[in-house]
Image 1 (tube, rainbow over the protein chains, first blue to last red):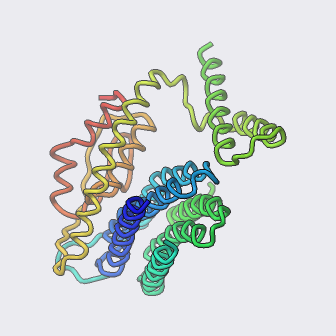
Image 2 (image 1 turned 180 degrees about the vertical axis):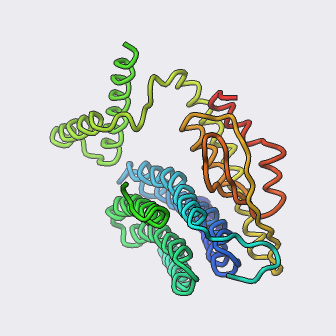
Image 3 (image 1 turned 45 degrees about the vertical axis):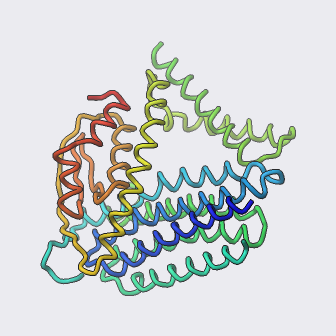
Length: 110
Length: 88
Length: 166
């Protein structure tokens, strides 16, 4: 089963790359609203790719011992797709209503 | 494959350490809330990978529960910061 | 008559969904666990059935089918969005130019508004800030994604096609 192992390693590597991009955006971008752009999008996709890779690994190696685990991991993926953007939107709305000013091109870092 | 999973878990722990910098530094409370949300999200993935390293199917249920807890915690915090109370 | 049929339908759908979750998550099929599952699903369905199904929910089957097709287009947009954000973050000069835009849509039901807000948050360069009665406030990170929402309006048309609320 060497082909499935290579595909799993590709999924995991792509997931880790997107997670690192998200965290570098969190450190590097100049304002609160732009930092939420980086984490809200890149974190979600990186997580989904890593869990999809682990799901493929389980379906190929351990399927006969525990056949219900891929269903649990699919629930986790669906929940992360619904919950992460909603939490991002809730924090952004709270900041906007409290009066945090957005950053325009040419100002200094905050 | 266990070595690959260990390497991935170490890299995820490194990203958690990097986002602690924004949690400590970030001017104001909103940057800190965003960084803690990121740490909670990475913990979910770390729990699933540890479940495969130690070969215990118990950790998948724990990660599902922690996903729900993290989501509700962030929502409650955002509601409190916006209105001054959680239930009106 | 109309209100009573809506309530019974809501209770039945909620009970079936909860019991399906119970069976798939536990994996043990003997009398004690299935009995406990039926009791817990019935209690939850009686208490909070109006959170899941509102009113009579007409034409649910064709809406679900079109929604399932819409999800695959959206997954492709999510992958494109993340390559765009990765390019903007890792570039040494960081080409960003944020602004806040507002626009109007013709969607009125709760499910359609939530789907559009989630799609806007997951696609290249935009995040929803506030929704008030069909009007959206959106924070965009550059001029190109903001124009894709204001001028082209591809995403609003697709969501209106899924839920049939032009």
